[in-house]
Amino acid sequence: MTNPQLTESLLAVIRSLPADDRSWLLRQLEQDNSDLTHGALSEMAMVGGAFDDLAAEPDLYSFSDGEAIAAG
Picture 1 (cartoon, rainbow, N blue to C red):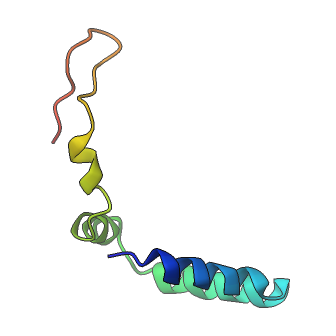
Picture 2 (picture 1 turned 90 degrees about the horizontal axis):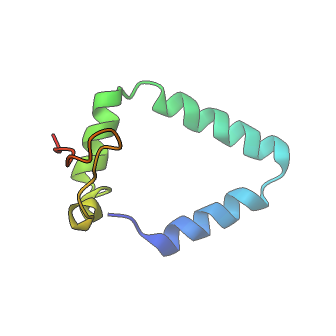
Picture 3 (picture 1 turned 30 degrees about the horizontal axis):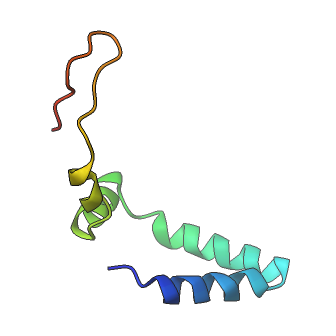
């Protein structure tokens, strides 16, 4: 679950860092995430509810034939 207030606060702190410190932090975050597979990232997004709102979206249709595109 995302905490928008915490996220905004963290972003404000990160943006307030001097450029060198911000670059260092971004490199550290990239290294920490490098061992996550695409499957693990996808699973975290699904379990975390990142795409739950898509269930309420209208159906998508193909440009070529106008047929509904089936999920899954």
